[in-house]
Length: 412
Image (tube, rainbow, N blue to C red):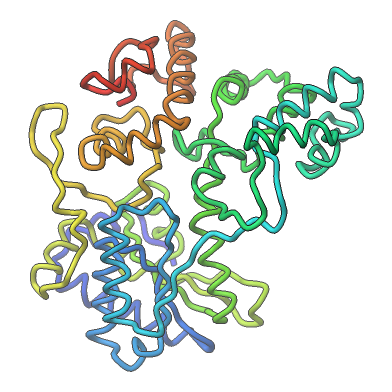
């Protein structure tokens, strides 16, 4: 299937009844493609809730067998978590599954300990035994095995070891990989931070590309990563999909949400095939709400009295001192919209100040400050990768501690 952006735009302007009918056709196609088991990816947000309601009301037999997989990342909004669990019990019963990140199978060094081991090996002239020929780290495990017993004992005393059985939480991801600051186009490497340190320190990183040079500068200056999205959300859900032999997954994604989703729908349509190792038949992704938008979702919710999370009732003030309500569900510790006006952290600071403080205090504030200082350095160079004009807030070098007490937040 291919639909032009112009044709997509025309579809998006059509009335809700038309969109409902299009969604029902897509859902029917999705169930028809399933030979094993269909599932719904449920976030507790308004979009996947509306989709679930649409399926339950119009495909009751299929819905009674459909698995509903809720991705509990551990950093859900409390309102969303409570709502998702309640609705899961009421609407799905035993077909409701909560996907959680896996646990560590062995003790692991925290990043600070890994960094100290690396420095020790460099000073001792032994760093070569943990590096590949190109200067990259062989594996994180290789570095940790090179840790001397006396250093490990010190790390034990100082609490610098992640113990076996620890959940790979948001905090573990932030420590081992980095904080989800800026979009995936920038923090695109999914590698542990100690691996990136070795790459930047020992590998040949010279390049004629100005954009690549700036990317390396960002990595040197700030500990950022999007790995948490895979570790907390994608991988846990796919483990359950494998256990249940799911071959069709319904998602409440809309083309209006991003340029990438717009492109995906234009080139793939409502239903597209991929593969999974546990299946001998195709794995299908079905996005019945592709031509819908937020207004359609709310019109549908009001028309059919669909329940929704209290999250969407929470209010905050925008930069114009106007009251607004939260529009999107998601992870509380995510800052991929860094640089945008009234961004995620700007809103979180008002609606959930305790969660905001925790995220900022335990590491994100430091990395944001590092990025802002770097942006200041590039301000006069008309950087393509770093655009200072898109950053809001106070002066670049605003002190982090003071930022906690002032409005607007220096990191907004």
